[in-house]
View 1 (cartoon, rainbow, N blue to C red):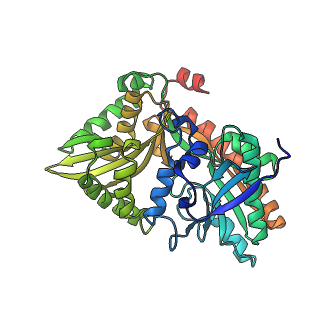
View 2 (view 1 turned 90 degrees about the horizontal axis):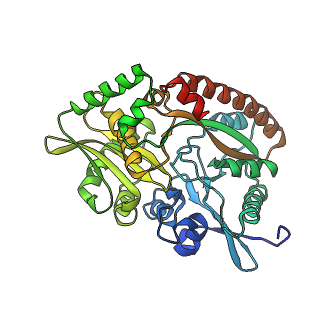
View 3 (view 1 turned 45 degrees about the vertical axis):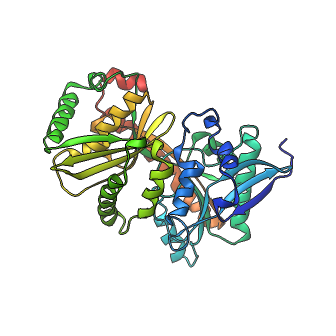
Length: 395
């Protein structure tokens, strides 16, 4: 099987392939009507990015989707983009770019296999269930060959799975270890069950924060599916713009993305809104996976003590418990999440650099970084909010 000839095509738009064919590789678990494990690699999510001009000309994310075939049969896809900057990736290589360009090289454009603007772990090599290894080998080799043929500086595969990291490393790509904070559901039936697993001091602190948040003087709504309305997106767009302007300069997603989301992604989302005096003042957007809730965006037009913690972290835990989900992934960075029950968790990426000398230097850096991340995770976990016995069980 491994000796079969593989054809790799580059697709400039998802319109070149059907939703059925893409999702048969991206989320075959949905064939019987279930939720996708990863909502962000579904055809409908990636197409919403494309159709809303959140990726494409002028964004620095130019679609170059990989399509792997053998004997006329699709064996896999990869969401790949030509990048003209390093924004919206969350596994940062800005220092690599600066070093390479100071040495006289040209770092951009580069190739990125990722979900744009989305720091959530999932499969990046969307192989058909009948061809897992052949598809992955073909997609990795095809991506590297495209980089070499076009004299590009690099290829990056961000927030891939641990299995993909190991497979890519065996093929010669460099593995990188970073971290996020995830909440893990230890079979809790209620939020109070979760609180009971914490140390007394942390438990009291969370209760105080939730109480303070409720003092903002309004009502918190959790909306999904048919409960979502255009006016909710009008409010959330205002929040999102404010956060985007402060963090990134300009928002990554366009207003049109949320209109399309209303049409095609409503069942994938849980929008948490705080309403006060007849208007929405803050909100947090989450996406459902089959096993996890993914916290994505937050914003507000009024600042109230602890409301951010309530909408982004505690409401997400409530939702996960109600839906029987195994974890909450609350996005990139944020050691403040530790005190709220979110433990440090390794995340993974793969990298290919065309310049051999530069690649050797980065490889040495990655080895030192990996050791530092592992040590930091151990220290942070030890300082976590759980009772000591609980931490030892999770380890």
